[in-house]
Image (cartoon, helix red, strand yellow):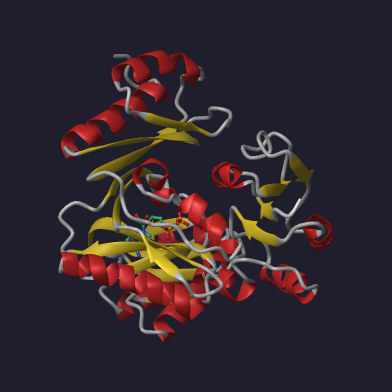
Amino acid sequence: MTFPVVGMVGGGQLARMTHEAGIPLGIRFKLLSDTARDSAAQVVGDVVVGDYRDLETLRAFAQGCDVITFDHEHVPTEHLRALEADGIAVRPGPDALQHAHDKGVMRARLSEIGVPCPRHRLVTDPADVARFAAEGDGFPVVLKTVVGGYDGKGVWVVRDEDGATDPFLAGVPVLAEEKVDFVRELAANVVRSPHGQAVAYPVVESVQVNGVCDTVIAPAPDLGAELSAQAQQLALTIAAELGVVGHLAVELFETRDGRILVNELAMRPHNSGHWTQDGAITSQFANHVRAVLDLPLGDPRPRAKWTVMSNVLGGDFPDMYSAYLHCMARDPQLKIHMYGKDVKPGRKVGHVNTYGDDLADVRERARHAADYLRGTITE
Ligand code: ADP
């Protein structure tokens, strides 16, 4: 058997869908998962249940893998350095991944290479937050724990000094940022290989509801050619400067005065790229697999004029399968992707993709299917 083994750390839906993309290529997967029930652990044949925070667990897991990659950015950077010192191919490597792991490191490095970011600095306590506010346009200010946040957890919008105590309770360094007056959020997604080959997907609009991604529209409607090219170039520059291997998502704010600012980076397949499964010639997952194996990258261009992805969040209605009958009958072009996760309120349990020529229609079909699966509508 000459086909390589990809070691995937983390058993979430991103791992599950990356594995899925490797199947037609005959790529073998080995998974390090927190539990045997995790989304990817249900479908990967070779699963090790263990703690990614433990170096010896990681070392034992890496035996027999040709390359290690990730479904999240939480593995301690020093462990990744130790694996590299053992001669293991870690992609993306720790030098790159530390920027996705720690928002403070990310902001410092992006500022150094001249990437436009919101005004920011590390803060030590609520009084320091008040000083940060006074140095700029005042409150509100956005506070973020530098590590461990996701889906809006670990992010606070604070209106005064008294409201700034919670972020400091976790004992993790806190980053303060100006609250950007943005018109919308965009994402520029690129994939880069160790050879330095890189591809850029069309820039997308990402609609957030309560800090969680709700819908992604590809390409971002009414985004001028200049701003679009600028966003793609920015993402390619960040990927090259930071030495990223694999998929890089650059989350952006489009400001009222027509600028783009970088919000954050993810160095793995990302929710803003799920549309590529059905809407691009090569999906983000397939290209991530190719990149970590240093294979030539696939064409990132769209297959349809518009593709819309809507997340399916858990609601009060646990039996999503019973909704398939209606959804599939109503829209034969609908693509449903479920993650095998238990339905809990607000939890991402799947997504749908729709595509076509009429954006309003494509959006309506995605919205309808996501709401029907969730159980918030019944017809
Ligand atoms: P995470 O992805 O870890 O949840 P983010 O840094 O992406 O955290 O923040 C979550 C959301 O909070 C963003 O999508 C955006 O809507 C809002 N947000 C974050 N930073 C700012 C900021 N500086 N100004 C305005 N809104 C922000």
